[in-house]
Length: 391
Image (cartoon, rainbow, N blue to C red; front, side, top):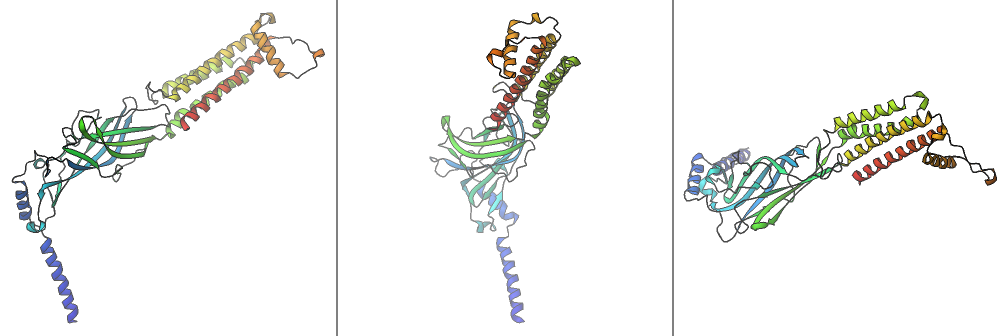
């Protein structure tokens, strides 16, 4: 029983003594601050050997992907840039200051590197210039600080495969005013960190690599390469499927009997409906010319086919109601003869007779020509588009 009480008492003494050793008072931190910054000069790069560059480690965090504008070729995201370096003037012995190993100070009292997004479309200001983030100092002289905000960068776009496209943007981060002989950037990770990342509903992040490069005039630059892929479901349902439906409806006009008198009105209705649809969806398709959206070219080709269908229905009505077969032109007779030879069975030469071409024969030939011809064109156009965007 005595041994158990003694062991309990010993544990309490160890815990209390540990708390006393590691306790740090306000006076300890105040004295530490005074000792560190009495002769400190924040205007001087914090290196013991001024002939050697200061190495600043950088970690890029992506918080959210905000927007992508294809026309303006800009990308907006919320990001945080963590930087760390060693300042030999900020080292101390923790045992002399209540075992204080870390302290947070006001950034106005400390030398801090200012990092810029060089391909920004906003006014050129340091990242996080409108916020006040407090840096942390360790007893080894290690300094940690963070700058964050909304970054809006220029990003060349390629919407030729819209809406199955992916966009690659490169963020260029650099410390203006410090060449490599004074300051070197070093990437702490080979990828941007996604611990705080919120996914976007329309874009999926595919690549987020980072690396440091040397650029003109002797500067050190951190590049962040981001690749986003668009979610195509909305545009597939609202644009591509209706376009396919209109294109498949067009040639069916030639199945309708000419006697019904509805061919021209039906073909015109489909043409006007598709024209109105194209006007409505044009706002959803990025309006840029270099490169141009292939889907828009496909839609223009299909509306052109609709115009050809209207021409075909008018020509068919003309020849169907033609009373004098002699008014059929020589060219139309020639193609009609070729068509009839393809359609009729082979007969012995001695029984062969030159077929008589009538207006209704021309109408049947034109029906077949426009029906199968437009369907073949539509299949070729759609197949070419799908092969282009999927390969």
